[in-house]
Image (cartoon, rainbow, N blue to C red; front, side, top):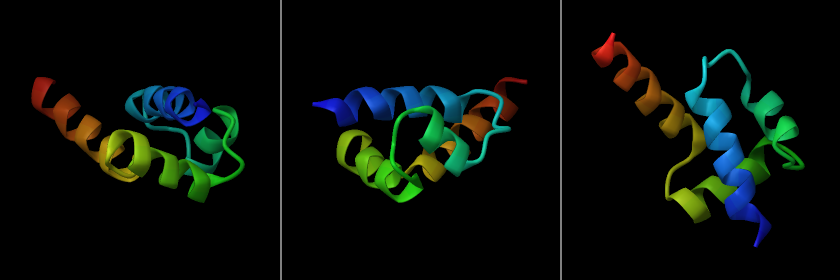
Amino acid sequence: MVAPALAGAGRHFLIGDGRHSMDEIASETGFADRERMRRAFLRVLGQPPQTIRRHARVAAQVTA
C-alpha cells in the first residue's frame, strides 16, 4: 500500500524544522492535497499531521 510510505515521508517533514506548510509537505511527499494527507495519517498513524507536528515541537522544547 502506498499510503504508509507517503505518511512516513510526511512525518519526516513534520518533525523536521517545522518551516514547511501542510500544503508543501503534502505536495513534496506525493499526496494530491493536504486533506488526503490528513486522511492517510489518520488511517496509518492514528493521528492527524498537525498533532504529530505539535508533539514534535513540545518534545524539542523539553529536550532543549
